[in-house]
Length: 428
Ligand code: FES
Ligand SMILES: [Fe+2]
Image (cartoon, rainbow, N blue to C red; front, side):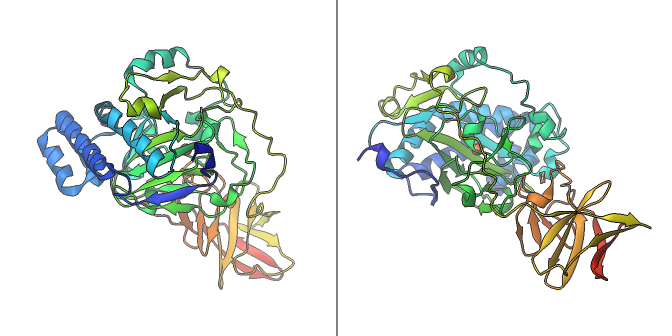
């Protein structure tokens, strides 16, 4: 069998904690390396606490500025074993029996709870950043380019990097290889509210990338996210050209995961992205333990065809209707030809804000449309019953009381009622 025969487009599958040879051992090795790094940086009592309570307690023993040093120690100590394991995933899970490629860029994701992270030192590092082999870093630094449009800090609205969550994206938008497959491996419990989220319903659509953020354009309506909770040691193998993102960690526990990437064929890059992840290994080099061999696939020599322009506006759930409202005496009024049906919603456009007006069952509700996190428009998020999911970080907001799992993220809500062919909203 050749690698080309394995269908990977749109693939996402969960793998139990012992489905790949060596998986359980390496999982234990990574957890032990994190605990050892904590012992080195913070002392034995801190490490003991982790041994007792699990990695989920990491934010109790490490400050946000300690996350980078822990990640570096773990990745450098275990890099070769992790690369070898990535090859094993290619061989046993994907059935790739020929040559293939493994990204030298590995990530250990240490995501502390949002309520802790939002108060962190703003000079800390983004937990989504990984590391290439140390001796390639100088070459990578010399190749670094700055794009005048790309502005991640603007998107994250002044939040400390420890509190950042990935908006929905395709990996190739952000310089990763095309036709890759990702391994996203849970080192501790990963509940839905701190998991990867996928939008597989959009797999056949040409989606617009916002070049300022390298995430999906913010006015693209989404279905409700598909959550991927994982047990410790379990992993997700998925096509990163499925739209995906990260649920802001609104739990009170740290979430730890490892990411690795495979390519069945020689990597190529999206010419629309200003940089590329250029450092790769071959499976055969790794299997022969040639760990000091890294290929430098220069972006300009490995560009794929440009992505087709998203000319066809074919959003999945349909663009939400925006209806102007008039305001008099502190009450907004939206004329309606018919009462709002169960499950229906629209955006009421007021002079100074937008509200989501929705009916679920016999309850009519109105809440602010701006997400209190980054200010994105919740009207473009998917809805299930009385929950609307933020289209950026997948946090669920209750349409009736405006609350979410996070105590610091809730929406203003307004008394609303139907009367005389109109919907009225009390803005007081
Ligand atoms: S923008 Fe992050 S939860 Fe809405
Ligand atoms: Fe991604």
